Image 1: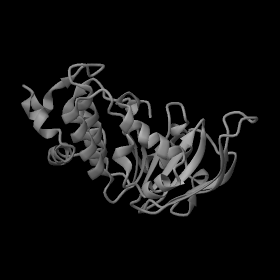
Image 2: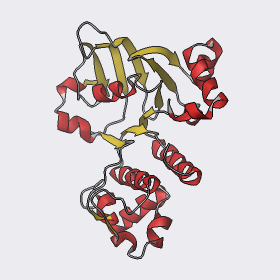
Image 3: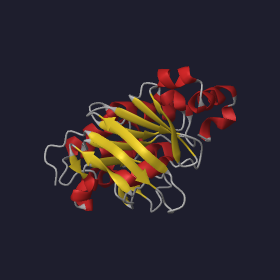
Image 4: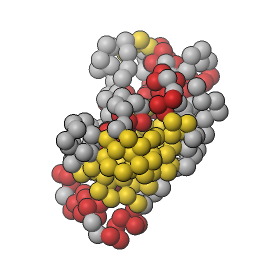
Length: 254
């Protein structure tokens, strides 16, 4: 297992396909320095989760290599590899138990002080304290007694507590109100500080400051660069970006 992970992630000449006769990722080269943010954008079904699946070794690449701090991820045990990552996904996962236990899942032996600090960092402490049982409120099996946005903030609090070196964030906030969305965006931005982050972006306005943006379409990376570079080329990213401002309907389709 890697000790003292810095979070330097490299894709070197990576090729991958789900089916041998349908290449998806071809000769991908990416160098994410510790603390940098890599955004992955594209239409629905473009293959944005493919990169995440390769990073976590849910699928093995066909050729090339992916390294973390210079170590090929194929030389690590999958369990050890996945412990390096923190994940906040579109489909939030909470279990039947107290809010305290759900946040504490991010770190074995977490103290009450650490749990509260994580909740404060994720802007969910105030909401928790408005509940009759506060941190001892029991979530139902499907956590239907709290809103989608509050679920997302709890999973962000869990990630703060886990203190991972590399983050995978799915910025899907289509089903939350505007105020909660602003809190989620703010919490995710603070969570990214000092951590290498891979962000599956839905609203392109939220990732304009990403160090690198990978633009995917039909499973392939069609463009790569930062926001200014991609806008200047007036290509696929430019069209996607402009369409979100011209048509509010398209905001959640990306």
